[in-house]
Image (cartoon, rainbow, N blue to C red; front, side, top):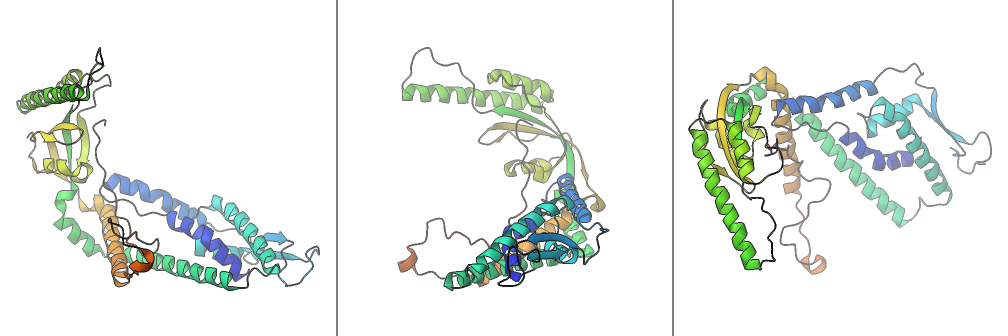
Length: 362
C-alpha cells in the first residue's frame, strides 16, 4: 500500500471520519442522549471481529503493479491490500465509519490507488506543482489531527468538574410544564376592492397591527385573571383572521434553554404565575408557569459532559487562533472587509452547540 494512495484517500475520507461522530448539542438532555447513541452504535459495529485472517487479501487491484516498470498485462501485475492494512487505513481516515460503509471506502481507495499508479507512470508525481500540493496536503492532515487531538483531550472531563458545573448552573436544569398564548402581530386581511397607494396600504397595515396590539393587551389581562389558555388561543387566531389551526398551548417538560433568549425570564416565575406580555418580531406571547423541578445530576450528566467538552474545545481552538493571527499586506490583498476577515477552514474555533428555540407553531 503506497503512501501516495493513503494521502489521496485522506483528502476524500478524513472529513467523513470527523463527521461520523459529531458532538451532541448542549441544552436538551433528550436530544443529547439521542444524538450520541447512533454514533456509539456505529463505532461498535465497525469494530466487530471478522473471521478473515489479518494477512488475508481483502482488496485486489489487477493492472496496478507494485513494481515500477512491470508489465500491466501480466497476471502478476496487481496490488493486494490485506485486512490488517485496510483496517489500519480505516482507523486513520474514518474510525467511526459503520461496517456497511467499508465496501464504499474499499472501492474508493482501489480507484484512487489505480489512478495514482497510472499517474506515477506518467511522471505526474514530479515537479513543483506536485510538491506544493503535497505540502498543502500535509498541512491539512496536521491541522485536522490537531483538532482530533483537542477533541479527545476535551472529552476527558473529570466527574467533579461536571458536578461543580451542575451546581453552579442549576437554573439551566430546571424543567417545567408551561402554558403559552401566542397572538400574531400581523392580521390577515382581505385584499382591497380597489388598488391602494403605498401610503394607504401602509395606513391599512398600521391600523391592523394596532388592532392586534389592543387585542393582545385584552387577552393578556384575561389570561392573568385565570381564563383558559386554549380558549384564549382560539380567540387570538380568529381575531387575526388565521385560517391555520391554533397552536397547542401546552408545552411540557420545557427547559430554560429551550425558549428563545428574550423569553427565558419566564423560568424566574413561580408555579401558577403569569408572565408579562412579551413582544418579539413574530407577535405577542404570554406564559403561565406550571410545576417546576430541577433535574437530578445523573439524568443530565451526559448533557453536562457535552457542554464542558464543547467549551474546552472552543477554548483550545481559540488559543491556537489567537496565537497565529496573520498580518496581511493590504497593498497586495486589498483592504480588509467591513465585517472582518473570513476565518480559514483549519484552526478556527469549534462551532458552539446550538440552542433549541420553541416556535410559535409548536
